[in-house]
Image 1 (tube, rainbow, N blue to C red):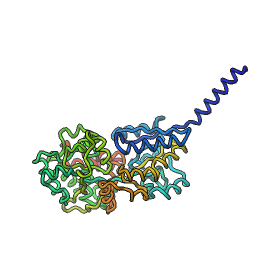
Image 2: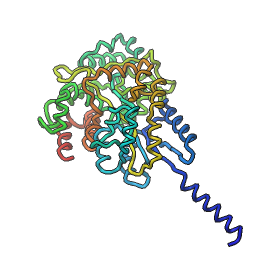
Image 3: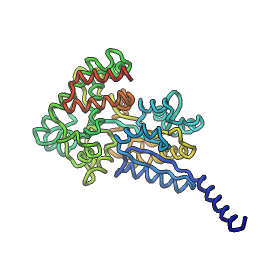
Length: 417
């Protein structure tokens, strides 16, 4: 072999070594476009990449419904990410059970629990194994537009019962103001109404009994009544025109543009609505938050909350670099920044007291006073039953099924899953 050939061989070997040393960590997130959340993610990724030569983290953002639909296929393919966003709950349990996830080593769990929320980490555990790191705690409540309320001469803080809310919906209709905007095409925003009504009517014990198939499961008087109360709202035509053709991202932009009196959505909507609005969204002075009201005769409590405990979980293909980045991505510094900048309500205990935004403080107070926290039903009950809850919420909203048919369909799905 001549020197030229030897040199070329050494260069090729060097390039091969460099190629092997380079590691890419692929992260799949729900849509964070045009929000402070996206800025936070991008900054954390950029800093990590700069401080870790040989490792490149990339984040792909996917609209929520597309994320839910495509993730099962991705997890079974060579294109699976190294980690992805998770709402926890039944869908997460299914993924862990089916072997799509990688659990953290015990020593990593012990170290992380010293800084990260043990309760949040527990939400991303299955059968005593931990599969990810927690990020935000979420609560859903009724937002209201103070400008519209003043113009209509109403005080949303006076709402105590579902009947009170329906009466105010009618006032808004009579005054030419859309009562609620909703992304009906995605279905899950509609399921918040149905979920809250079920919780208020049957309470924690009743919800647990349904999940266990007791008292008729979902095909009982309480679930039928939840559907009937939901249909009382639907009969008032409370949503914007063409709501079933509007996705969540569009609907939150409409809310940010001041197109309705109310908006039933989670605390994450503060940044999302401002990012999606045409002019920066509503100011804190224009916003108010109230809990979902009680239903007369219900067994629940107004302090029973609906929401999530989200974070990111590792897939079975994740390597040590992914574990290392996950700790930074969901770590104390990132969550403290999120708290200070009003991005979200963090799970890290040391960050909680840093929340200064007055709207997020109201949501934090709702969560702090919670007597029973129910995870989003479409996540809590797993993909089949959770998907059915979203489906019937949309079908009742369009008048395609009755409350009785919805309850029977849910129980049939529960029995066969």
